[in-house]
Image (tube, rainbow, N blue to C red; front, side, top):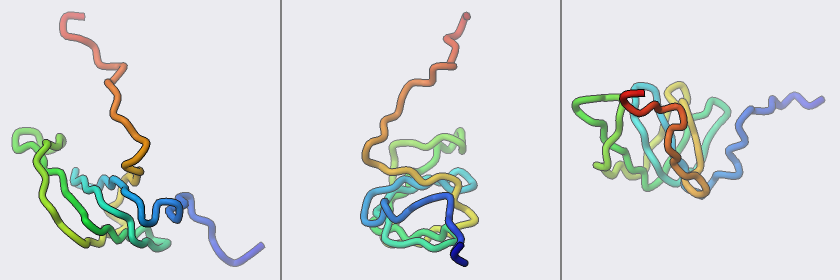
Length: 99
């Protein structure tokens, strides 16, 4: 057995590819993953942040702002997903009003 710890996430396959990152506090950014470490600190290039709805801070809007090259601190990273090959689907558990 080697002394190297295996990480749960294998981010090597996402390097130089687009990823979407959700952070604690509700922030959400997309960009090209340029690097990472064992603490899940991420380096994103061409990062774009999706701005939150002022009425409901838990929802994002279509408004964005360009951030450029950023570092996401690993303790703030909640979710990392590829931007290619994912689609948003309707919530199957959402009940229509009046049901």
